[in-house]
Image (cartoon, rainbow, N blue to C red):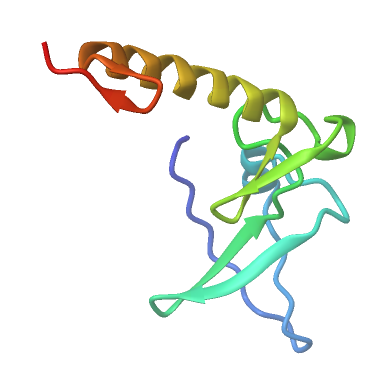
Amino acid sequence: MKEVEVVRKVDPMGRIGLPLVIREALGISPKDPLRISIQDGCIMLRPMDNRCVFCHTPLENSGGTIAFSDRQICVSCAQGIADAARKQFEAMAAGFNIHTNTVRIS
């Protein structure tokens, strides 16, 4: 993503306007919730996790979600990750001659 920097003044009620270029870059629409936090002396504005972090499917259309490390993952992506991890573990286990929770030394 290209870096964008814009200067805005805070109005008397403490509000700022987010420029269109920033809203478009982050996929922020009117009335979308934003997380506001302070990190290392900076104000952080982040879109709420209303989409899967992998496939970007809106979570309300995903058929369920899994929370992992403060992020939301749709069930389909979570299953894909689980399958890939299982295959990788099985390949590693085969390299170590691990079978049904026992170690066989050749």
